[in-house]
Length: 74
Image (cartoon, rainbow, N blue to C red; front, top):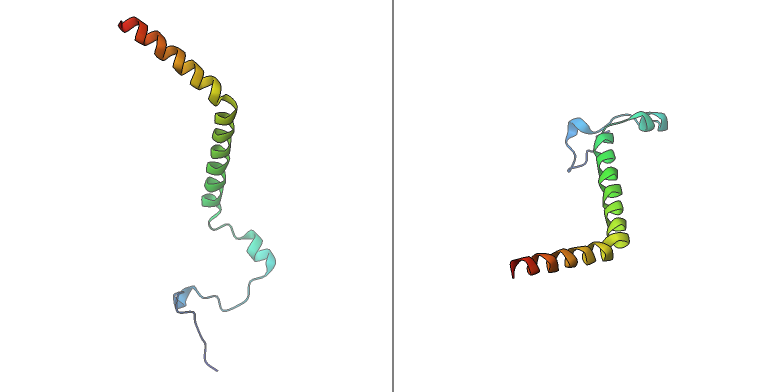
């Protein structure tokens, strides 16, 4: 009987025994990166929501300040 390994995965990383569901659930490798990805996604959604809610008001305030500055320079 010959053992076949995946060409894309190094031979030393191929598991010889099947993992149980409990072992998969307890495995926390990569959890930190996943948490950061979720956090970045939530921040992006909040930024988009804030821009949609306050975008018009902020644009109006910037225009008013721009007009004020241009009057001072004249």
